[in-house]
Image (cartoon, rainbow, N blue to C red; front, side, top):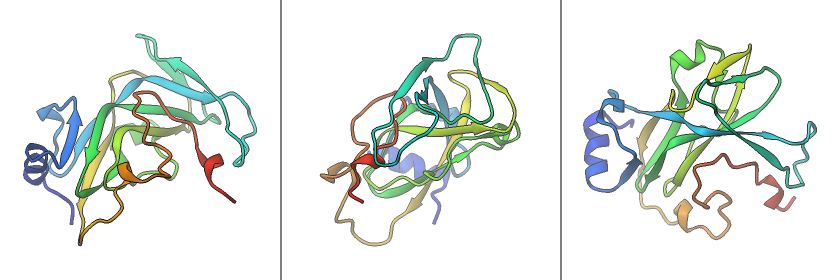
Length: 178
């Protein structure tokens, strides 16, 4: 079941969902709008290796915006820090962003219960498009969870994305054993 605006507000008041900064005007009927933070990152190497730590180069989005180019994966981060303690957050792009040809996630649209951080965005585009820090970029939808939770993300010893940061985080696939 997807939480309604009233359920999201109730969960925020109870500390079950945290959004910082919280802006009431960003609360939709059944979602919360999030914004592009001021940092982007690109991988330094053209060929990435799933078994190696691929290094990234950070870009501070200038006031005049930054042009995304097709054929490049950009990592971004949400301006908002979020926590979810008893619901499953899903990050989806806003239709206005999609209509500019921007995808905000390749595969990682679902968060885990206990995720406490800024969201890293996996941004790609179909044609050149200028983006700006602070622009609406996506929306969080919250699903209720059936049953008790044993293994919250923020308490997992092997969780790879628990380090709190407002900057994009590169893939930590290399930490897996395969």
